[in-house]
Amino acid sequence: MRPTSLPREMTTRTSIEHKYSTAILTNIDCPRETVPIRRIGKENLRKANSFSQSYVSDIHPRTEEFPGLHIAFLASLNQQTYYGVRASLSLNNPKVGAKQSSTSQMWIQSERSDTLNEIRLQFISWLMQDSSTSNWWLVVDDKVHIGYFPASLFKELNGGSSNVAWGALAKSVPGSPSPAMGTGERINLAILDWSFVGYFYNLTVMDSSNSFVNPRPHSLIPYVDTAANPACYDLIYDDYLGPFRGHGIKFGGPGGDCGS
View 1 (cartoon, helix red, strand yellow):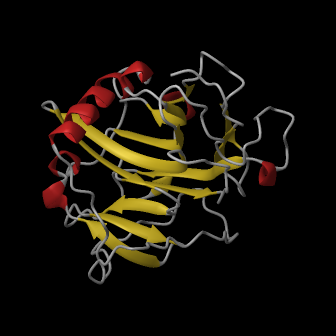
View 2: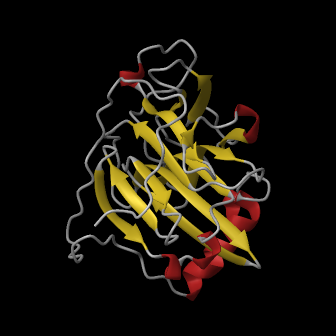
């Protein structure tokens, strides 16, 4: 199965081919051409609504409501509608302990009439909305169509997404040390070799013409929530890096005593 409408070629795309990771699901038995969708309860909805109120409206999460969670991301402001998001990203192996997690993600979300709809992806190439069906398709390597998130379950996203973001999350038990993020290396401007850090590059978004285009730098804002200990994590937005990498971010850090 394939989307009924495919994206146009990216307006600034080059002939260079990039290698993408393949997503492998374990311990989940899904029918062919479908993707797993987490079932959520009232507590999940309460937390999602609270997270959205602080996280979407002013891009500054109130982390005291999510103890143990730390975030480094580049997010869009509410200035346009998005119909897809794409990036090349690093596969990292950060050091994590029991009851810890550290992930790289990109996501889309919209909130209308106090209802939040959100789709988050880990280690996936891109996500696009089929303009004919409004389903959100998961695609790897620009040609492998994994499956779709049905529009009937994400009604607030049927007209596109109001927010997109790329970044990473690190979580631990409140009061305990936080895990490493990315490769565990502290980010600084002197790091030129991207293999030493966690990264997203070739950041693009799908516009209303069904084309993947470069994001507008003035509509993006980087954020890291470790004010208690800036040495824990960091993120640098490198803007446009040329035709090979496009727009990119580097992120990561050793973790440690990062506060709550």
